[in-house]
Image 1 (spheres, rainbow, N blue to C red):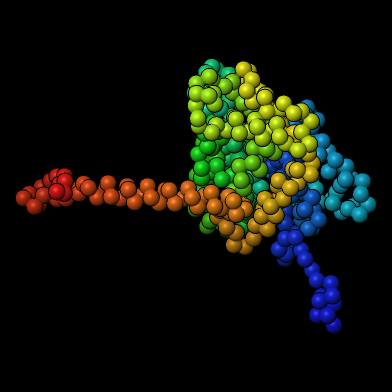
Image 2 (cartoon, rainbow, N blue to C red):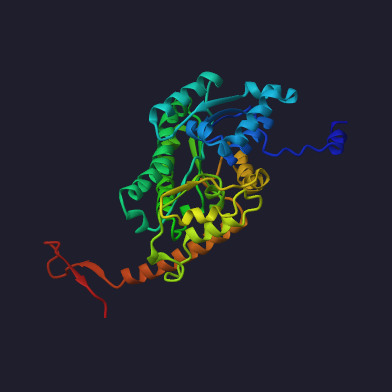
Length: 365
């Protein structure tokens, strides 16, 4: 009887089922990825502590509008009454260690534990190496890039590890991008921060494995992070203008993309990236566009989070996988050249004076 019932009404869950609801800590819940993930996880029966950067929430109406709409939906819908009991919103600036510790403590007090830490806050600094070295103001952008994309995740991870270690269970999910594999002209510091946090996580995974704490790096296409967070641009230098430098700089690519965005309220948004002053903006994506952009990433994170045997690294989408494969193919060829060059010089013990263990270099041929 049950079989025929299931055949008539097949279950099609969005995410794999779990023995018990998961307890998530999301570091940037007011981002498009964070909002979409919160909605899906609550529908799935999970519990969430949602970190929100106070400055963005209070002072940037366009940035916080979607999250405020989501909170209103949670608070007023009769059909989702139990959502309110499973969602806790906390102020969180990951660059401040004290706020990280306070937010984690509030999460544990609210739900008794944290199962999954999802680090998803990111900012993008646009500019070549020289453009970011022009003056004291542009040099601070380099520090800000690492404070947000590297030290911020490190802070929240350090604040959460004692909780995971005490219960011998936990999962850290780090959202980066395929820029963790690929260098990109005009995004040197952004790529550097991505490589840094991935190296940190790869090493951390070995250290905490004995405590049954897992680490997963999720790498969507670059656009997922770049177009859903703040973009800050350094003043361009004439030496790197398109007519004198043919390199496909990210500033020019992003500028053209922002000007063509469907639903963009300001058709000249991309021009702001060419300003002679340091300029920051949030890409003016429509709500529907944001949902489409992050959908595949949200599904991957929700499926991976809390899994008994999660992947150490997950590249989202066929396009991203293909790009990384090409990069790895190039690296493999470089390694072959390295082996060939290394074999050109052999270091051997001298047969004439074996007792003294004197070594000399023999060059073949």
